[in-house]
Length: 462
Image (cartoon, rainbow, N blue to C red):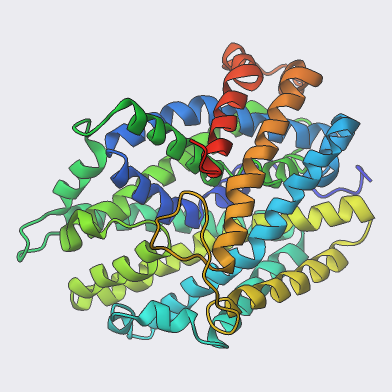
């Protein structure tokens, strides 16, 4: 099985594919919101520290597990230690649950790109446009199916001819678009309000300690740590799966470092793209998290820009579409690889099975906004908010299963097979393991404690 396993053609292919996985909707609508909410520069500093410690620990652990076992997450944990097979099941459940609703949101992005590209961007800024679209019975399902099939097409092509090939095309384009939109966002101004992009940039970058307490700082840490799951795609089987495609002779530590840098830079630029522009035309009141930021606030910003907003909006949603696609590809690959490794079936068959299941679940989630509508509550949600099927599935995958998987990974590496397992894999070709002492402390003690606190917070206990 190992001889027949696909692999990336080289280190660059792996880095671009992994970065493509991480640069997704979570970065684009969650990172800017959290930065604005958590004191601007305060959040940025905490995030950077955690990325270099906590995030690094989980990322290098998962990539090393993947390359060592040459298996996807579903079977890799059991191959490392039979007692941890259950963690493999949990890790495979995460992308299985995420893919259907991620493709639905990808369909929303596609809808907005088509709207702006066809010259109807002002309609997208009208009150009730977003709600009117997602509550339609058939249109969201159609856009979901198109986005899902585009994702499946790449997976059918395989690792090097599919995932790596599309990443080498989309990631450079995506990065250029991100940088271009970021520069534009800083330079704009609104004569009516008197606000400028540079003022918005200060809101984003300058730390605001005016209302900071010990409790609020703790919440900043928890927010930044939760964001890292989105930013580096850990605890969802993706990095183990991608690690299994890395050749034994490639420099693993260099790849991990480059993924860290790329992901952190793009997350940082996501804030520069969005916060100054929203601040200029809507003030700090416009900084809401989740779909509301992407599909309600941002279109209103483009409308306020006048005719130029039509073009900028189309470019922006094209960039978001690329980011969503590269991420959904990695999520589907994690599921498909698990089916291939566990049941010894072909890529085509595994991809077909997962596509049909994801479409079926996606239809149910889409109908949750109309035919299957109901009202529910989740821990830590505002009293006046009602969640739907999508929110419940997202909560189970991201707030419950992902911390459990990450805790299990730390316990496995830190206390059962010992950190030497990862260190030996990273240094197998004579490479140096940078931050080795930090890694050992983090994986054995600090990361598990932080993850338990994050999990307790998800249940509303903290």
